[in-house]
Amino acid sequence: MKKIFGLAILTALMACNQANKNSTETKDSTKTDSVAVKNEVSIKDKQKSEIFNQYVVLKDALVKSDAVNAQKSAVQLQTSLAAYKGCEPTAAVANKIAASGNLVSQRKDFTVLSADLIALLKGTEIDKGIIYVQHCPMANKGDGGDWLSTEKDIRNPYYGKEMLECGRVAEEIKAK
Image (cartoon, rainbow, N blue to C red):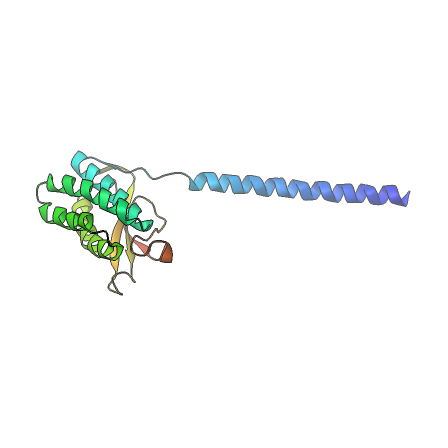
C-alpha cells in the first residue's frame, strides 16, 4: 500500500513539473515572436527613401565588419546621393568609403556620412515607422559617432562584434 501511495505522489509531482515546463515554453515563444516584429520605415520622398535604404545596407555591412560589402553598398549610395540636389559633398564621402578597403578608414568616413544624412532626414516626411538616431560615445577615439537605424536595438557600426551593443538611442525621427 505504501508503494502505491508513494508512486501516486511521484506521478503527481512529475505531472506538475511537466505543466510548469510547458507554460514556460509558451511564454518564451511568445516573447520571441514579439521581438521578431520589424520596424518598417516609409519615407514620402522616393529619392530620400532610396538613399536611406542604401545607407542602412552600408551600416549593416559595417556592423558585420564586412569591408567588401561596405564598398559595394557605398558605390550605390554615392550614385543616389550624387543624383540628389545638394548632396554632392555627401556623395564624395560615400565615394571615399567605396574607394577604401580599409575598415577603419570606412568607419571614420561613415561618421561624416551619417552626420550629413541625419541632417537630411530630420526634416523629411515619414509616412510610417521610426528612424532611430543612435550614438556611440567611444567611436572615433572618444569623440563619439552617430548613425541611423530602423531598429531600436543597438548594433554598432563603429566597432562591429567587438562592442556590438555599445551606444544608445539619442533621438527618434517619427511620422508626423
